[in-house]
Length: 112
Length: 496
Image (cartoon, rainbow over all chains, first blue to last red; front, side):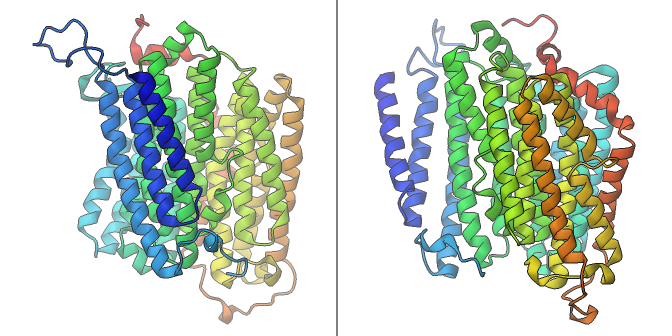
């Protein structure tokens, strides 16, 4: 299961990298979003998948799943959500003001 | 356990949140933000005295004892950096009062500024690698907004690149944390140090260490600095000054912490790698600083040279090199803010940042000219100003470690720094006065106060270096002996 997940993470990273390397701003943002999902999946996989029962005292489980990666994941998702929202708003504003979403034209000129 | 430890973080957060309610009362916001910075400074100086007499201060948040909970740790290094942060932030705020403009002030400039400072201080204080990530994000999100606040064309363009780079480096940071957790099963710095020492720093662990180095290099501007000159020259002076003074330093701090506390077993791989990157950074930064005729560009490339130089001291991994890196880190925070404020004032007065259009300002503004001269000398490490001792110790450290090439490059690039900054001084302040007083875009009224404070500080730090000598020595002692840090966080006989 872990191996499969690692392969999936690799696929997500590939797609994300491809999108980030394109010229359209919207695709770049979608690319960062996909890489973000890959990262989240990686965190949860690195903690080990399904090693035992839920980590609760009353259930008398002998082995239990590590719950720390899930806490990390939750924090990472929230932060990822906030930065993606900010990035989207900012690029929309940039599109309105600068009149383009092509990164080639966003380079700027020397005489500005 | 010491509850005072949390104060430097929650003072700016709470005051910042309160200020959001009083959006229209700009006067109140100004006073509150100054009070917040002064309070942080005073609390940290009190903490510093405590650390000197009782050792490292820790706070286990929520009563969850390390390594299970999140721990806040203030050692002497963190305390020194937080004190410097509060002083620099105080001066940048004073400068912002006159220059930042009413619109930015109304759109939450002061709360954002305080949140930025919160993130910076949190990064200095945290004892947990994931919490370091969270504090980085607090700092970065505030900086995203600050860099685009005002929405001019150049700001929007640069902020998009800046955000993209930082989002990607945050992802890499998470990847590195995930790998580290998979291998060690802990996130607490002290506990990590124990575990890594126990299992040994093999090839895989060193790879993760290099991944961390890449992440922090992106934040610090070590070698991966291609985003830095554009991003730091876009926002208004007060904001770019605080960026230049603090943001790269947080990355440097993270490198220092990681590679003295956790990954210190393979210095011939990791530290040599840092040294090589530092050398390339210094050379490229110096070439950039010499090449441009635009004040903002020259100053931002000087930031890059400074980063390379501090990390050259870290790379040497000797006591004297570390001492030098620490002195230079404190000096660099002050003098980078100072030189950015000075350069910004020149641009503010004349309305241009092209050196070819500037001439003879010293006749109209003698104080400004002399302070620029002092700052320029301090920047290139001329005695008796504050840059000298750090430069001396870093060079000594690199020679002691046998990295003669690194020390030589460091000394050579400081000559280029001197040339680049003297070019600004001579072109802007000497020569015929081409501009009349009436033609100027603004006045220096009120601007000379924060600049004067920082100039006085760089002189005082040079002449009175003896005063902070004992504190810096304590900080370096902790850096060179990780066991002191581990003992303070985990207790006397920690279980690995």
